[in-house]
Image (tube, rainbow, N blue to C red; front, top):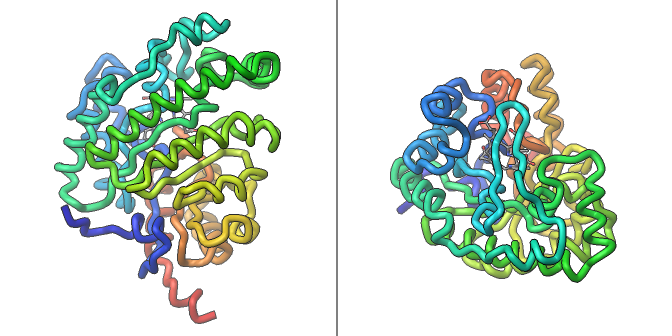
Length: 346
Ligand code: CP3
């Protein structure tokens, strides 16, 4: 199918674009009343994830309502651990938790390596979404990075210090690597399934990367990120390691297309570190609490720093749930109306 708007894919491949593509991490769900209405018609978040036509519906909502240049499939990074035999629950307003966690090497042994079919609901949602989008914008598939998944499976939820996860890494690195490899194998099967179902670009979220030192990141995250990139040679891959400002150069050395950045990572410094790869990011989501005038100024300043090419505008993390959708729309339109010739003439 020919895409009517392929700005995201051209920017990801490093090709010239006539304007800057923009989308928001966590745009599906979280902020839209239309999303909450769909979720309220079901038993909750998990049923929505596992009901393909409704998941497709909320995937497309931000394209219709916010006018973004890409859709991201509605699912969660935690489906991978569930496919491996470790169930998660989603508690309203509190977030995810795991009734059972990984506590010892036997628990790791017991986990299965998931196959693409274990995630049939998300793969079906991708097929339905692609059909319904009818080429309007590209569809992004995604997964969590193996390290971030390990954190959830060991901690059982979020954490302030992640000491249980780090205890596993530093006291029993062999077991940690066994777990990371099992998660990686499952993630690759899942992402291959997403590509075959129609995902146009794949993003890997390493949300807890910022808790590691550069050395620990080299040992416990990068090798697995590499395997994922190598398994997807046929689609652009975006690597987003939140907080890992120190890892930009090493991530850009992997066979990926785009490096996601947060607001702690200065755009011009990122450009120097990533060579000719495309950058994505990096507005602080809290900027969207400001006035429209403030959002315009901050967005323009961000674009001037990144430059107009090899760039995908986004926030530096997922949009926060209490953000006014009209402010999000304003951010999207500010990027889309930006006259890139004014930059290129400089
Ligand atoms: O980007 C999108 O809109 C697509 C869907 C998507 C969700 N989760 C849906 C969701 C994506 C890409 C994710 C990724 C995800 N999930 C990450 C990585 C990105 C990041 O923010 O760092 C992480 C760490 C998770 C784990 C997770 N899922 C948490 C911590 C929570 C609770 C609080 C929250 O909203 O983040 C979730 C629940 C979740 N996943 C919701 C949505 C729309 C909210 C549940 C609801 O209220 O319906």
